[in-house]
Length: 276
Ligand SMILES: [Zn+2]
Image (cartoon, rainbow, N blue to C red; front, side, top):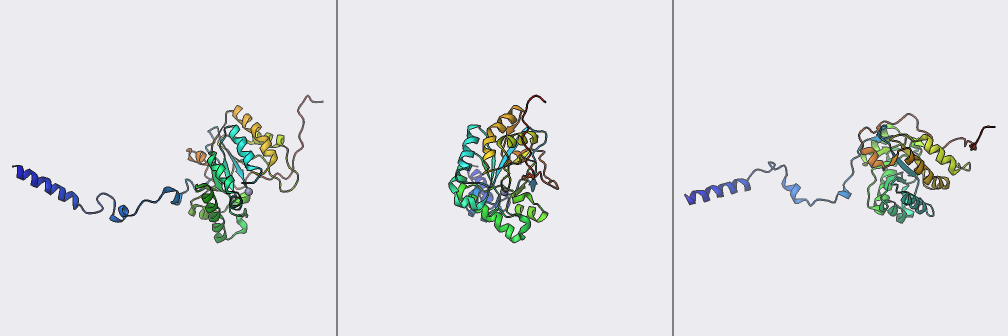
């Protein structure tokens, strides 16, 4: 009787040991291959492209393009920290190579680092192969400085066509455009004042907006505490691009034309007061 029980147990053991592979869902190769750290796996884009978060949620993603810059980015990060705001920084790979310590601080301060190309060349001037190079090299520069793989790519100038989306997605990037602009960027001279930047940003803001701002602009830096305070007073809170994109209801189409980050004319400030 006891012998019989031992035999049954042995048989059960043998059956388990010789179960054909595949029953458990793993092959021998899967188990033998040591698992690679997650950071080195290509990131799958969350969505193909995004131009706005959920338009019913009072969340705003502040985004700063073109950094990092010596003598500026640290002050921008100090201001964001003092105001308890996390943002997304679309970094130029070439600038990251020059100042990896600034890129690292952006990530360490809790902000999201994102890709703005290696050399800031408009994508309509590039072949698909050159565009791949521009995005991939910037990815590498950002990852080696911050240990973070960017999840978003914003094409310089905001020019988007289907092949750009395809190339970006293949490299793991969601194409990130913007919803509203504070018009804080002018190519030469004609710089807006901090008041103008703040007024435009607050007037343009809407629920779920992705707001485009620029890293090396002094008026933007000066306007920032004002923008944050006024938007909070209206009920807005600030999120990163990943947080915005993860909310259901994000706008994953690209508008035919983007709100211009380069206003052609700078309107004079009209002082407030009683009408004459
Ligand atoms: Zn740019």
